[in-house]
Length: 429
Image (tube, one colour):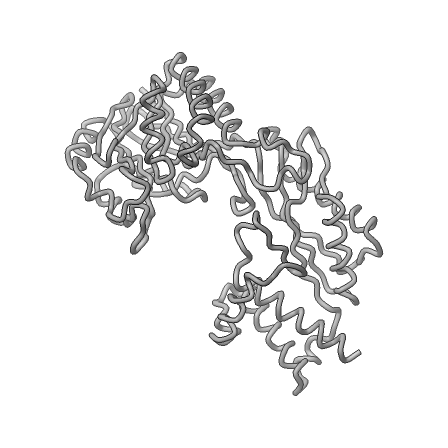
């Protein structure tokens, strides 16, 4: 008899996706609550045996009121359809989830208070551990009851672990544990919450993050959703992500090298075409909102002028449109415009401009070859670039309260080097 489970990573009920209101998407249209309802629909339609949550169902303690109504309705529907609901608490909901579980009939909290427990779902034993407090600096494997729970779970034809933890952290306030230590426990797979980027399925013995249920900011690129785990009557286990939307965060590039825009209207036409192409590349009807991080790149005669057009385009309003019933809009723009120059000739110069050109080319080469930035820059300069992160407010990157994640050091270094080349050229002319 096959057992089917839906496993959910960080849901964060109560949190709102960043910046979507800039192009007309209501904060309530792309929330974890919407994704949860879609998950419930699919789990019921597919007849899964249980839905398992790997912690951080709720974002904060003061989200109790919103979370109660959403969770109670979802659990009621699942239980009525014969689907069990099992959860462990994470660091965000260590206090609030046990209170919610006590109020919502039908949720089984596994590992309450940091003590390992197990349950059987069909032919699968599930061992789980919950955060006893918001911070926990010891490995969860040191928690009481683990050996007993593991042995009891192994009496089933398959056994999996459900956990919220900081994998492979040397030290952490969020239950640090090594993947290798989990692998040695003899379970068929470990499904872990905490990091919002999902790990790829590696087969039997898998240890990895489930990822978030829905992308909540522009650091959470790509599809998000639950994992469908299937265990057949021989105990073989398979797992695959099952996106439920409703928001998809993607990167896109607009290269203006061959046809630099002459004015804001021309640039907006080009951006519109990019948004149409993004939707064509992501046609799944589940995505009702597609949030685009747009990179404007290219070698042009006047990078400063084109950069000004980019700034003006974003200041008017966030570019967005509706394509095949999905709102597709730009949430952030990064310009990487370069002067149209003979770089080889500049690099041969024994001048400040030549030094800047050699640095810019070296950074480009390091990034293209995926080499450490230190291969192209000395340590002092790397530290300088890191220090500029807080001061970048205009130009190549727009930082504001919602900007997360900040651009990486290599990108900052490349942008700064090419801006230096551009400014030195402007002085020469």
